[in-house]
Length: 84
Image (cartoon, rainbow, N blue to C red; front, side, top):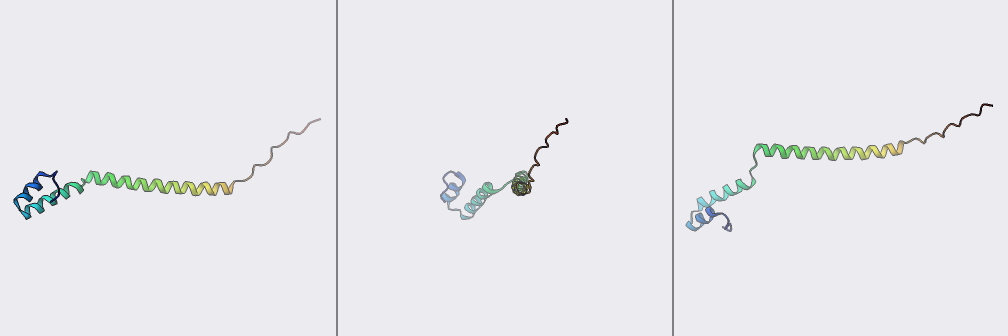
């Protein structure tokens, strides 16, 4: 086992206990990859929020393109009549 930073893994490997070595390896993997429910929920909310921001930006770009295409020219200013 090539994990010198894990003392339990070294001990089990040195003793030659394969079942113990498997348990230590499984515990290490669980420790590295397990996320609590609170962390999972927070990461899920973040992912959903980022997706929504992306959709909002796409919608803004689409509307900006439509608005520039639909702009009407401004009528010329009305000149004041001379009352003589």
